[in-house]
Image 1 (tube, one colour):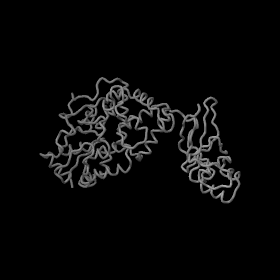
Image 2 (cartoon, one colour):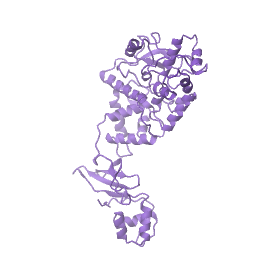
Image 3 (tube, rainbow, N blue to C red):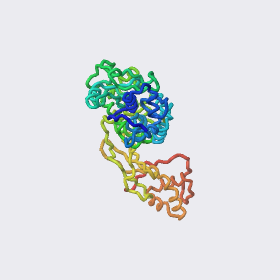
Image 4 (spheres, rainbow, N blue to C red):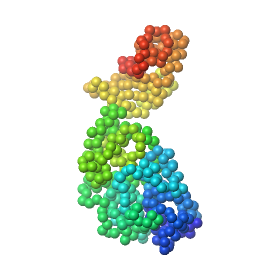
Length: 439
């Protein structure tokens, strides 16, 4: 059990806390400090994803109030790297940090392949250092200053500066404290000569990146992120349909929106073009992880776009399935939109499998009646029962709220023997755009 542990300052990085511990204790060797903190002589001084945190939490002074999970959440960069990861990935990464199994953890998180603003030396803000000295009597490393892609201080908007502390080049087992030697007044600035527009854009991105560290929102699956971005580009009027994006216009408007920031991030830009295919991939199906800063850039862009209101109103919309108990209730949360013969067509699909469409005619500003498209799994048992009870074609059509020709074709598609005259089924899916639904 440790007899002493430093007070933890607002926004501080665990690396910084451990560096101040070593300085405060005055031990001659960093190895001695590591042994006192972790019970081991050789612990890697990781800036972003440190390990053996359960051991450290167990050795803190009584009533210190910091559990291992709280250390991860408030003193490391794991919340940033897993903000857009599936919950299972976040749990595995957390377990690795608790147990000290952090070798290759960035690779396991899918981050090693990205070069997005990778921090190679610890960064600081001169204005923040002055405040630290006034309030606490010493400097410390802030974790929101070490985020990839963050070039300015989220609080002051001034350029971050590069310290003398290299993230990888210094001793792997040495925590280096922030002081006047490591944070020189004339240290190189990350950006120089920025315009007011560029500075505002960079500060907005820095603040959005910091939110990923501090906001505890439930994580989404990759399928949920796919749906989120597709809906975003559709609301911005940058999609031909619910599944087809106007990639050329998206990239053009994205570059125009971020023209100030992207020019200062060569990892993301190659001349006038976006480097790689990450932007088109993000509005397609998410199969792999994307860098958190790429999410920040895309979300900032979508948030600032003019929202194109759906001509079909604000959801949720009712399910019109005559066979469902929830018929008429607002069960449909999203509507797909595509163009057909000069007008917009909304596709309303319920989780029960029932699908109908409605057309919006721009010339008159009117919306056409609902038209049946698919029934889903509820159809076969009900239709089979009605046929077995030898109901007439018109009676079945009335029950299903379809015209008789549509009923005949659906029966053929399901392979149901009927007493009605039926054309051979070709195996193709059927959409009867001429069958209006009853209100």
